[in-house]
Structure formats: C-alpha cells, structure tokens
Image 1 (cartoon, rainbow, N blue to C red):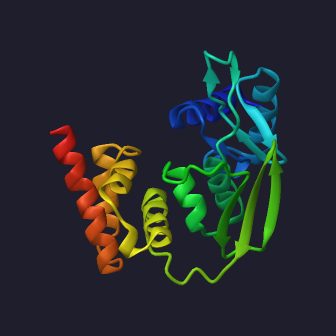
Image 2: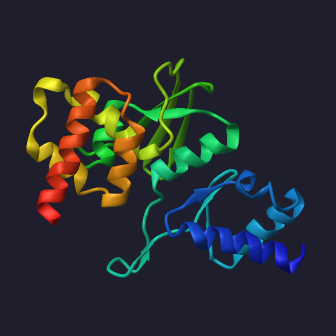
Length: 207
C-alpha cells in the first residue's frame, strides 16, 4: 500500500468528522480497492477507526465523561450501507421522530424503508432494519429533509404544535434549515407550511 493512499483515506475520514460511518466503496473513486482494504485494516489496528460490522467502519466519537467511545450512530450506519449497496432509503416515521428527539420512547430498533432487499442487522444492543418498499415519494436531495418530512407525516397535520417545531429546529443550524426549506418546496402543502414555520420560529428565537 502506498503511504499516500492511507493518508488519502484518513484525510477523507477526518474531513467528515467524528461519528461518520463508511465502507470501502466511499473511497474507490480515487484509490485502488486493494489499497483501501489495507489502509482500513491498518487504521483499525491503530485504533483510529472502528470496525462496526462486516464491511462498515466509523470514526468514533469519544466521550470525555464516559472515558470511552460512544455507541455507533445508526443513522450514519444506515447511510453507509445505502451507499455501499446503492440503495435508496428513508426512515420510517417512528425512527425519524427518534432522531429528532420528538419521541421520548427508548428505541432498540431503527427501521428504514429501502428499494433494496429486506434485511436486518444487529449492532451492539440495537437493531437496524431495512424493509423493501417502492419509495415512490422519495424526491429530496438531503437526508435531513427526508427525516423532517417523515417525522411531520408521522405526527399528522392536526397534531403539530410549536413545541414540536421548536424541537425540530433545535437539531439543525440555520444553514441546514434553509437547505431543508429549499429541498422540500414541492412537498405536501401542510408539511411545507410547517417547515417554513419551523424556520420562522428559529429566526425569532435566535434573532
């Protein structure tokens, strides 16, 4: 393995920040596959990355309070698997609510709809499940847009309150909220109205 290949792999990992999950496929556009495999194996031995499951790794987040790496981010792992296998995925409503901190129920299973095969993965004490679906309404560019739309659908038009919209806005930066607004402009009217209201509430709170 060329040293430059390992450095390139590591630079890409560091560039995506702690918590990022990935597979060898995320590097194949620039680096020979054999060099990627050797680099990832070496980085695992050096404890710079963690092997989460077969073919999937992450750049773990270290907790100074717990004095250890925190559990893998299942949303990151779901996206890494989707990129690896060229699946399109969207979280189910309950999973989206959990990611946004709207649901207070402890969740041991995170479920995604996928145009790939139905599969289930056990990761530590949690389960990541993919259920085959046609995904007819998947038309967004950004992962965050899908999560917000799925969460609002799960809550329902008649159950939306400012408290919920404030929780959604607290999960994103102003730039991320603007991207969501642009990305979802053609979605269902009441959903887009509440996305705009979320951004308006955020602006008032942080203005």
